[in-house]
Each structure stands twice: as structure tokens, then as C-alpha cells.
Figure 1 (cartoon, rainbow, N blue to C red):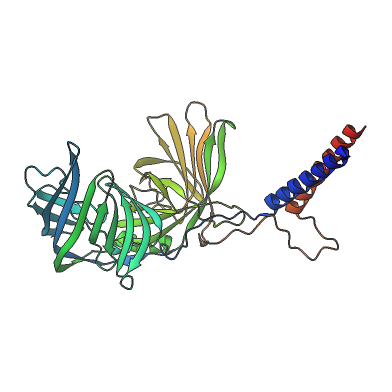
Figure 2 (cartoon, rainbow, N blue to C red):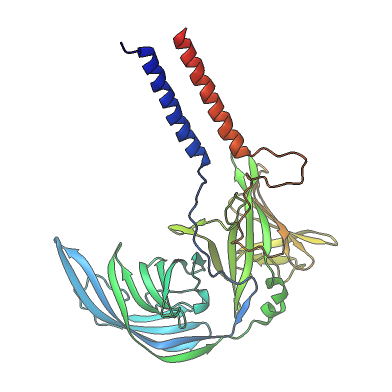
Length: 423
């Protein structure tokens, strides 16, 4: 005769052991996160660009595919780019293609285009980017003319060719780019359009001199170190702005009267790199390079601090208060917001506070906390691992304590259930 109670007990014990093994494995697994290896970041101090070399003639063969009445139509034509004039940062480019009237996808129409080399990178009207803008990373470039997302894939020929996924208003494609001269060597787009461009010729190189901006050179001391701000954003739950992390800003490039400002989002997460991705364009970027001048981008210093009126981040700020250590500037917008900019006597912005002009609620804020460089690739230590051995007792490991508590509670519950069935 089979002892049913004994068999049931064996099955219950086997189930208990199985579940305990599962629980142990779940809580003993370390969390693994995927991170991109960062090999090249913008410099923490500025490089002054005094000249740019470009080819005055580029020729490409273009192949496009389109669907017409469920039939794939392949069309091929040439595009030639000829630089006919150069004025400081801008070039005038004559575009000529031999596409027919029936060509369904034309990369760049015939005509003459004015291209600002600093603020208009990788456009179909002249497929070029200043080589100083290239980094083997995933990042964004924001100018008054364009938002460009670049995601580095690989390099070829001893680093002379970089492969990027590029996205702007004109391209969503894989592109091989010359790291020396900045022009596209090959481009392949499959969605939303099907375009393949291949360089045929790049000749007649010319060197464009960039005249230095004396006012920027005078302020190079303010550009030579980073600025780290604590950032506050409005929370509807709290009814005010709450801290959301740090922002580190550096100035890797000065190009004439243009400044390149690199922005990093810094968060302190256990075991993670300080540099965290932020949304940009259609995806995310590990840093954003904002290109403009002192009045069009939110630079961290004011050239003419102490003046009654200053221009900053597309806004006009009027002197509101001042004392021996700080100037306070005020700006009121048509959207019902009022901003106060606090500037020290050296011209550095030490605080920004934006309020709702009606309710008085703090909407956004920044506070300068350091001007010492923190490498964005630094890994924040594991905060759940206690390693202090100087204490006269051994501290409890939080992870082990959690595992132990769950397992003990589960075992006791299981034993109680079994005993209740027995009696």
C-alpha cells in the first residue's frame, strides 16, 4: 500500500527546494547594463579653429529605388557640387545633376545654395561637416539652422573614414565620412527613401581662413574650464521645481565668433557612468554640441556683465539688482514667465531661476556648483556594496539581507501551510 501522505510530503519538499533555488538565483544575479564604450569626447577646453579646408568640387553617382504600380524602379544620375564663392564662414555652391524629368527622388535640385559651414553640416546641397565636429560616439549637434544626430558605428583605413548613422531633416542614412576632410564618401538610406550615393571625385581643395574674434579671445579664460550646474525642473506633484541631476558644460571649439558648447546630463546611479543619455531629435544622445554665439545660446558667462541690458539665449535681460558680488538681470516673456539671471563680477552665471509670473511657482532653475572638470565617463560606485572594514563589527549587506528575509518568510509560510494540512 502506498503512503499517500508521504508522497505528498516528498512532492511538497521537492517543490519547496525548486522554488528556493529559483529565488536564490534571481536575487544573486548581478544586474548587467549595456553601455557604449566611449573613446572620444569633446575637449574640456577650447581649440581655436583658424582655418578650414574644403574641396571646391565634389561629384557623386546617385542610385535611387522607388515603387511604381508594384514595380521597383531603379534610377541613376550624377550630382556635381562646385564652390563658386567663399565669404568668411559661408560658401556659395552650384549644384548640377543630370536627373531626368521622370526621376522620382532627387537628392539636391539644380541651383545655387548658400551654405554656412559652421551651422549647416551634412546637407544634401553640400554634403560636408567640419572634421572637428566628428566624435566616435552618439551625440547631437544643434545650431540655429539644423538639428543633426550622429551615431558612430566604426572606422576604416586607419581612422581616415568614419561610419555614422546620421539623421537630420534630409537624411536618415548610414554614411561613410572622411575624418580628414569632412565630406561624405558613401551614403546609404533605405527608409523612408531608398538612396545610395557614392563619391566619384573630390578635387580643388582650398583653405578658408577663419578670422579670430577678439572679444572671444579675451574671454578664453571663461571658456577654458567646465561649468557644472545643479538642474531643477517643475513637478506638478510638488508644485515647484525639484532637482533632477547635474549638467556639465564645456567649450571644445571656438570658430571665429561661433562657440561650440558641449552639454552632458550627469546622474548618479549605482554602478553606472555619470554621463546619461538624453532625448534628442528622434532618439537619444550622450551629449549635445550647441553651436552659436554669446547672444543666441545659453553660454555660462556674460561678456558685458554690469551693463544695464544684456542679450542671452535669444532673450533681452535688464539689470534688476546689484551689489558688491553679483548682478541680477530680469527677463519677462509673453508666455507669463519671469527669469532672473545671477552673474558674478567675473561675468560667470551662478544661478538661473524661472518663475510663473502669475502663481509665483518656480518652474526651472540652475545653480553653479563647480568649475572643476568631472569626466562624464566616470563610473559612480556601487552604493549597495559596503566595504568599510574599520568598524568593530561587520555591516549587513543590504542585498543579502533582502534575499535572506524573503527566503525565511517563504519557508515559514510553507511550513505553516503544511502543518495546517496535517492537523
